[in-house]
Amino acid sequence: MSVAEMNIYPVGSTPEFDIDGEHHTKYEDYSVHRYGDFVFQKSTSKNMNKLWSHFHSKQNYPEFYIGIAKKMAICKCPKTGVEEWYNAERCLSVQQPAIGSTITVNDKIKDKVYCRDFVFMGWAKTPVHEWTMQNGRTLQLEQKFVDGLLPQDRRYLRMKA
Image (cartoon, rainbow, N blue to C red; front, side, top):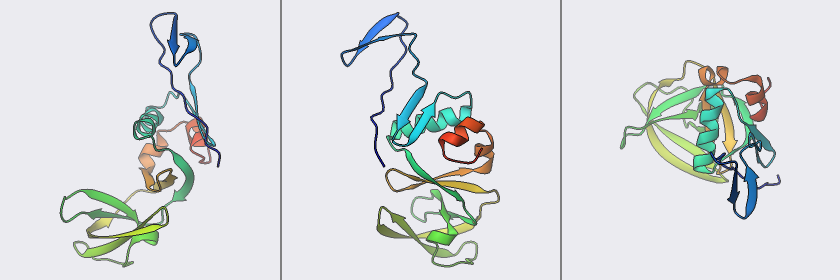
């Protein structure tokens, strides 16, 4: 996959301004943003705008769409109490855990496997879509959030419209 440089320019209140030695006007179209094979365009969808903001702030972008998880486990860290979700098919050591039991999660990130113990809290009730991110982690979005995306937003995320 080729990586293209991403430039985001603010549209100023003055008619002209310079950024990095380049001359720009406030009328230029900055609605298209590229990252590798992905093209992000300014959206009217609040959900896509939230995603774009998250991607840019973390400098972590989706590499490819995995699909909908068959079973998503809701787990809680026993030390911090933070809730995390894991694809049962890929990560859980036990396929039918009891609620409140301790389970081992084997999370593979960029060819390294990390094992941690969590308290199993239950199964996600709605479908969850997954993407592999540039840093090797997985982005998970509930169906309700995905339903708020416009057809062009789904295409940018490589989902079928």
